[in-house]
Length: 585
Image (cartoon, rainbow, N blue to C red; front, side, top):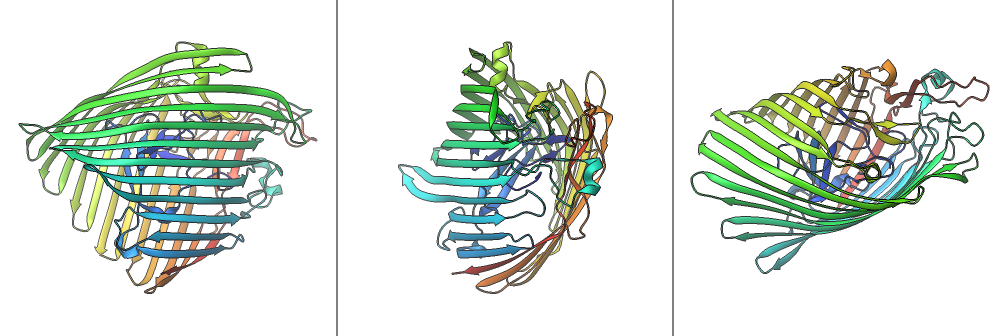
């Protein structure tokens, strides 16, 4: 999370630096959250409206193995499940205060006599931030509720409304770090706003042996980002500050179906139909924040559909095979009002997917999988003609050993991507860079020596390179390691430690980013009707860099103007503490 809370997050998965979420598909329930053709980044992912206490689980799929994995699932897919487990249910109020003068309040309602997935919450937060120009505020309401039955279908509703306001400090030149306090910023006026309204209705039904799940959804989004990464390098008189404005509406229907067939066969089917409309502008601003030039003015409508069919075959109890394919088609039509010109186009992709699971011994599973995924073209690309989706081919071989209290896994993977996209700080958007490939391995382990104790660790090693030039892909860590330890009782003491270390990363133009390591902890106590929790981020007060990039800029009017790139950094948060009090009713 670069700068203040509120902007899209950065994710590292299997050698992908999903700087704004563009290579990780994320769904809330069955509602897609990635934003096609977002003005800031294609596939932009804003998770600030998600209230953490309402998330009961995350379903993660690395690679592209399932039929329902669609646009932006180039590295992985994450499914967020809302709910509150039985031991935590009831009406709840959470009050939180932090060392940055952070204040947060949450009201949550999850009646004990309702299913796990029924929950409603409202969150308020304000935080001046740990440094200069890093304040953030938000209000979020999120809920999911069972609505009874209609005919033979069980209905469930999901809704969210959110508003966020946040500063955008930008990055500092590495050479300027000694002259600025921790969390320094060149900018004093830049910032952003983010708004969302979401509604969805899910129906689950059985028709004989067929299981059906259908989700209809609608979303409205508004995003405004006022940023300056490069000072006055491009425009010495007015400065390089720019305002990105994005308004979008989307809606669709997703259907899943499974049916057992004779002879150990099973049918899986998936369909998706949705529409997405965007209206976006990029305005260049002068030093007073007034627009002086419009760099983009575009509106576009996308109609997209997908159909996936596959067969599962289990000839023996220890063997399961899956083979299927997914077809995607989309049509884009819009107007570039800056040119001015209209554009339209239709494109698509057929994506085969297959998997094999062998269980030679009850605790051991050996799995192999291949899948082709896609990243759709963004709207502005259709004006150039001859547009096709970016294809990703993902193959992996892994094993998993599971016994009571122990879960250990290992996998090797290979990924080929048609077009790598990297964020250009001078342009303020992501740009295509050509084909790339990734090779890597990962291991993970969870150990529970006692029901109240969890120990876990993971390690991923990746080599990511552009295919044509055989040079490293900027931003991709050579390795990522995590470790965690937790102790928790239903009543009484709870504690936890989480450590993350990111290895060296190549940057653009041959530069390199150093490793980063952060340790965070939690200590709490739970009584029958209340709890007290202390969370400490960056427990050792490490001076680390949350982000590093290599590009040219000019901020000091006394310094000569140069187009040579230099390393810029987003300083990571120093040690911060938050104390929370929770009471149940």
